[in-house]
Length: 35
Image 1 (cartoon, rainbow, N blue to C red):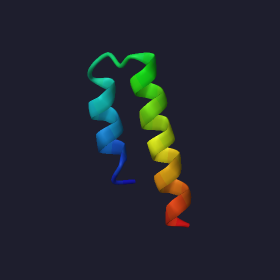
Image 2 (spheres, one colour):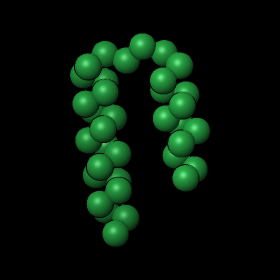
Image 3 (cartoon, rainbow, N blue to C red):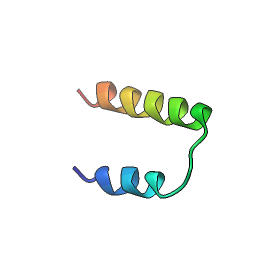
Image 4 (cartoon, rainbow, N blue to C red):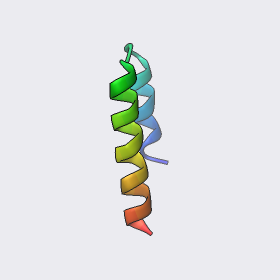
């Protein structure tokens, strides 16, 4: 839930496709590592 604020901040500026991919992979990695 706390991560939603960060996601909203990211959406405030235009991200390149590479940045989006990188952020998505980092998110998935952190998500699975938490389990």
